[in-house]
Length: 299
Image (cartoon, rainbow, N blue to C red; front, side, top):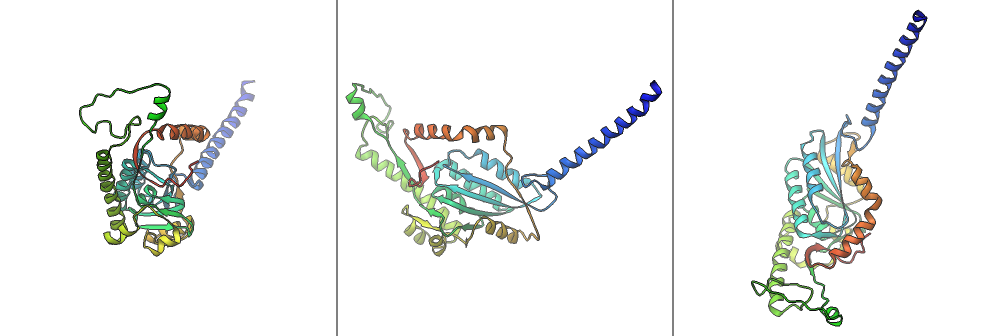
């Protein structure tokens, strides 16, 4: 009986070995031909989506550094669909794009909306591609305050504030802005606006004077932006891919590599809309200074 079982075990062992080899081969094939794979043997272009309001910079700056270090990635495309957002995160992304563009070709592809902070980031790239109908521009700064002292008075709630200086509670929702408050805030906005204007003028090779003329918060179509020198090429995402290929002297087909989605990212996609809506409502009750176009209803 033992002698009869021995050939069967050998056959099973061979089948198991063949199955293992086939499995490994299948994994390699999937890795090679999956666009988001970093194991692809073809020339690669990294694509980093920048979507929605800009409230944090960490994920995007880290991805820029990864693509910058990856020798297989010959160029990077920023796919921007954003009305802008907080000043600090916007400037952090802008600076990281500048660093990346020193060693790799970086192209901005503007989607439906790339306004204010979304456009601020784009000017750090080597070339900007926009659809003729893309909403862009909105070069400006906004700071919003919510006030509810009248509501508090109606329901009999009062605040007592002890402060170390006159302006320590500037922008507080339970008191009006004084004339001196407004002077200080206006000076702050003017300084941050100056930074925006200088970034656009430098990135687009425009004079400060010409940039100031259009930096009043107005929005432009992609076609208008091209006439003003704010955009290089009118076209869609594929046109941006072709431009990146030419800039990086890439011949033939390329593999587009996107940031890997973690399990948390997938969970965020499932519940993200509801959570983002709640967060936006909460944030809307706080004063903040932003490079943001407020004409867009997010979500």
